Amino acid sequence: MTAIRILAEFGSSAAIGPLHCGASLNDIAAILGPPWDIGRVSKRRRWPHLFSYGDAGLCVCRCRRVTMISVQTWRDTVELPVLGTEKCATFTGPLTHSHITAELSAMDCRFSPVTLHQPPGQTALLVEATGVTFTFRTESGSEPLLTNAGHWSTTHTCPPRPAHAADDGFGA
Image (cartoon, rainbow, N blue to C red; front, side, top):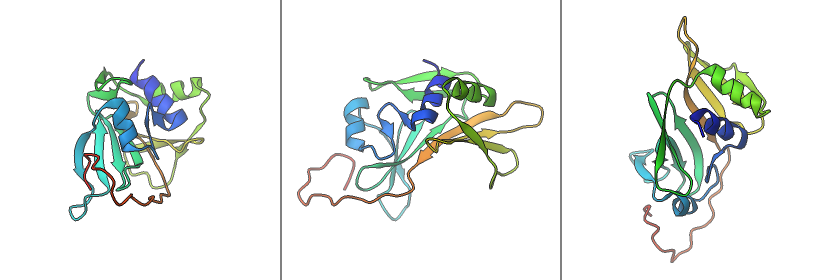
């Protein structure tokens, strides 16, 4: 499996294995092991909180549901979780606009350019069926390079937390 294939599958399904918006952090941890604790979104509140599995970052609500997935791809290597293990696979090489669009097309996954609010030096593609966005850095004279692939939920209602719920190890 290549990083391009994993990211194209993310585009078509809005999931990387058990990582998807709405997934329970406890269910994910049961499959992939404990996530890396990145920190709070706000200095004043514990939740929402950021966790990651390699370069796949998760924003998690206080009810322990994933509300956003952001795969950082701007480094020289990309680390993505390997299903059934607590390890990440490391991928190298440029992740280009043509590689991503070719793989999405091969999967019969429709996408369109994002035209609103794109700053200079950036372009983006939106996968129509899932809402996954691929963001690319553009530089004069070179092919656009993927910097991020992301998906987020637009609505979220927290279920009530049981009064005597056991500590899940992720904080209260």
